[in-house]
Image (tube, rainbow, N blue to C red; front, side, top):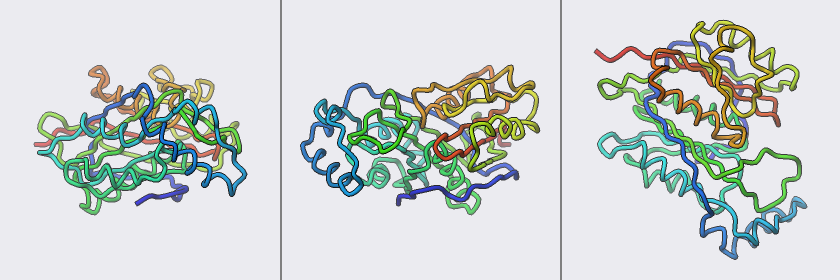
Length: 298
């Protein structure tokens, strides 16, 4: 299943999610997929773009540039999953088109992931898509529909058509994946999702004030992770500013989640709350997710 366009924006504060964030993996995949050299790619892309008056990117096509989302995501699956602990729900998130636009990648990945999970793909939400995917995983977990969920954000650096308006493009082919579990293994209690906020239609001038308001009630020892859509100038004053980290700007759709994974793996932050915030400039949407260290299972 693929979900296109924005889900309803919300501001939520509630009890901890049943799912615990337990593991993460980020990767870059250098080079280009052999699929980028397929002569049918030009024909397929031309057929899709012609009705909208969109021009092909001849340089990208002639250079056989582009990467496969299946190849990126399969590496993340191999790094994070175990046949003994099957996945129930897989959520694939992307913004730029795949080098093989005719493939239903999420369905393909369901067959490559332990557990043959129910799979979704979310697109056309920019940086907000992964936060929407997190809402879906949380909803499934609250109805006992998912004991283990895998979120994979992917992006490739090449478009085979010229966008009709300015767009943020990655500077490399990357993936960032996160594993949530309702019943983590002993010794790995993970992080409990405490809050999810989404604020739509903000102007650039409003983003800083909105972020400051969302951060006002956070614990003083919170580590604030700023996604690529946010810059240092928007950082609210206060204790959070001393422990903020900024994601790589060259990965607009995976950078924030890669930063979250790095913070999750940092033993120096094991007892600190983590907050990831990101902004989608094209839509004005600001998202924030807050995790706190979970209590070990008895």
